[in-house]
Image 1 (cartoon, one colour):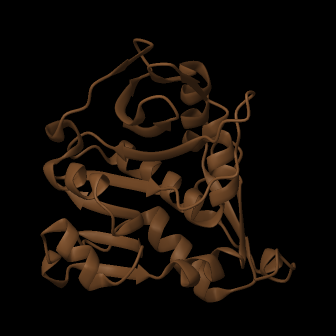
Image 2 (cartoon, one colour):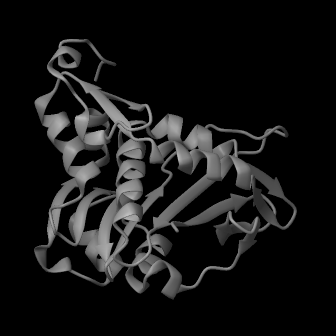
Length: 236
């Protein structure tokens, strides 16, 4: 089962870290062990906007929101960071988290709008609509597909969704420099990094693709046919 961790900003209590137990319909406290020690560390400090990693035989992905124009019904800004952590050596969890990472990379705005619709800010922090969260995760079970006319983007998409490079970091979108990130993380990753991007580079790549949820039975690796590559997509 994939663990989903929210670090959500409330106007009343600031940022609160909670894990969504969507099976038992409750928000619970989250430990470093549940997130992996390294994941917990880098999720709590600056240095990355998003990162897909292999830690302790688990797939880990987090995304830290750099900007939010999303308001709740009372006009309060919803600002959320999320982490997704798979079970150890669970290939099914790995595949779903890869798809989530790819979708967030290429469809950041849509991703965060969907997440914001699950969140209600409260006097003590926030609540999550567990039915909406579980339904959203279920969409990734059916697969996603990519429309792009860029071979470079298609290659990146396949790398993310397959996640088989064997590197500690599959990809990272940096908040500042690589040196700043490893200082914050207190880990140099021994050069085990597949791809790293600035925010501008990531946005440029994302502008050249469109990600859609696929029909049941279609896997993400089937994306980007020659016919689709001829079609224009959203401009960079």
